[in-house]
Image (cartoon, rainbow, N blue to C red; front, side, top):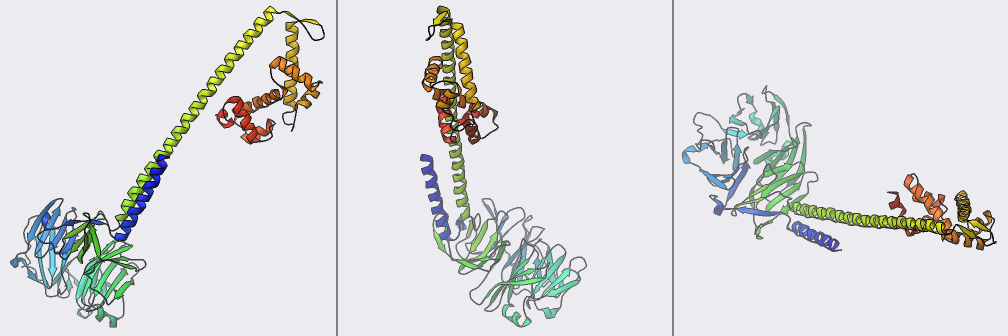
Length: 510
């Protein structure tokens, strides 16, 4: 009973916790601020390096977080270069050579994390650059990408670039996407998500993220309109997830093929990629229990599923996952499951103890019956030795051996009659007396004198003994055995059997 009460209490508590977390909308976040080593609490961009370190950029500074340590790299004026083709906003890349590239409003600067030195671009004639999702650096010189990819100027400004295993995709301000073969550098096809007339509404900025489903997700922004698109390169298909003329959108993150996250001044948008349903989280709760009403500059999901949010003035917020709130419920469910297993094991343990006690009682009863039978046998032998002769009720004098044989023959005939009629419904004492050519009272006197048993008990014991033999064989069910032993119902048979043998028929069979 105590275990049941505890079980119910844990269920109620887990539901309360789950309800509270759902009301909060987001998991509780750990805060990382200047007090933890950041140069500033105004966060511009977050990304993760291949070795697991986190890159957090603030104004004119790169913060590298490795465990509890923070290393900082400050921008130097002489390391900043102009790239006239880039008119977008703040963007950060990491390439395969441990370089961090920072682009912002027509400028770029780069630092190598191994050497701590700034990368010089004096010998490069570039007008823009990109790093794809495989961390490969692509430099752009006017309309030439890399070494041999040449695009048409009428397609507009090149705003984004990404690759898959065989192709490179160029995303232009006109909304056109050009696909080139990586090996041959030749144009394979072009595609557009909407009519050319609509391109002017979304031509200012573009942010492309390659999802784990190998599709490209693009957030395009215009002067007052925004559109969120999905492009499947295998099928060459576009889908509009949402479009709006309200709000401002910053960065995009696609942690899986069901979810997208977009930051904005009002908070964090959570978008269902299947339905397009959007939910705005305008506040977060810290691990200290404080509520923050804040906007977000950037969002990033690390390789362990953790979510990082960069705020305007409150530093970095980190949680194990956007839906880590469910983990608490999972923990409670796991605890409940363990408790349930323990409860089941406890019940089985108690059942096993009761079974052992029953078996012990049965063995004690059998030992008592064996001892009683041995005592009666000895008493009978002593009596036979002291009384060799006896006069019967007709006045005849006979040896006790002769009387014993006569009684044995009588009992055997009685047993045979009962066994022959084992399957006969309602076989009674009167029927047995008639089969033995006796009166009912004479049968009663003779059986009680020989066996100290009434005829009713005599018939029932023979039936139970026959049932016990069938139980040991284990070939029939309890109901079938009860019927073959001549009992009117299985329940009556079980009751009589337990009274006689001290255990249930099912237990006796085992």
